[in-house]
Length: 353
Image (tube, rainbow, N blue to C red; front, side, top):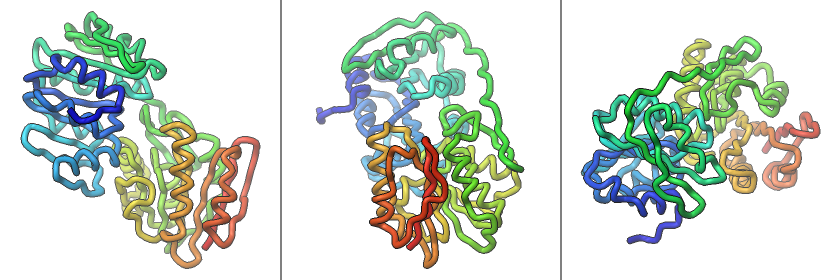
C-alpha cells in the first residue's frame, strides 16, 4: 500500500471493511488526493470535492484534467470525481449504499451534506463520519443522532470515526441569513466566508476601492459570496470572480444573478493566480481557511506573482490582518505601495507596478 500520511484517510483505511463491495459517496472536507485509496474494493466510488486544487489532483491521478468551470466531473472505471457545489453534485448521483463523510470545519456544512445526500441512500445503508478531535471529531455523532443510533467505530491519529444506520429522515435546516451592503443583496451559505455578515476587513477594503471603474478589467481573488467582485461590477468594471471553492463560486454566481450583474461577471475555479490573465485591478481579502501560517505563506507567494497579472498602470488592492505585516513583501514585489487605511486589526494596501 502507498504511504498514507493523511490522518482521516488512514482512519477510514483501518476500517475499510465497512466500504467493501458498496456503492460509496465520499463528501465533506476532502483536502487530500490520498482519499482515492479508499476507492479500492468499493463497488463504485464517487468523490464530491469542493476544493478545486484537490479535485484537479484527483482527476490527474485518474489521467483526466478539469477545466475552470464550476460544475464538472470525470469518471474512470468505477471511480468518479465531482467538482461542483452540493446542489449540483447531488443531481449526478443515483442511489448508493454508504455515505462516507469527512467532517467539515463548519458544523452546519456537514449537517447540510447529510440532509442533501441521505435521501439517495438505499435501505439498510450506512453513514460514516470522521473528523479530527480538535475539529469536532469527538462529538461528530451529534450530527447523526437525529436519524438513528450512532456508535463509535474507531479512534486513531487524533481522529474519531462514527457510524449510523439511518432509521428516519433528518429535519430541515435553517438557512444562513442574507446580508446587504450599500445596494447589493447577498445570499449567504454556511461554510463560505464570511457567512451572515460583511466582515470588518472586507468592509475596509470596499471603502477604499475606486468608485469609477468604467472599462476596467478586475479580478476578485478568493471571491467567497462575491461581495468584492459585485461591488466592482457595480462600479462598471468587468469582473472575473475566482475561488478554490465550488460552493463559493456557485453562491457568487447566484448573487450576481440576484443583483442583475451577470453580464459584467465571469466565474472561474482556480487556486490563487494559477492560469490567471492580466487585469487592471486585483482586489482580495486573502482567506485563512487553512490556518494562519499556511495561509500567510500562500498570500506571500500570491503577492510575489501578482505583478505578472496586472496591466500597465494596474494595482493590487489587498486587505490583511495588521499583525501579518505584508508591507515588506509588497514593497519587494511592486514599485509603489500605499497604505490606504489601517487600524489595530486590518490594513488596506494599494500596490502598483
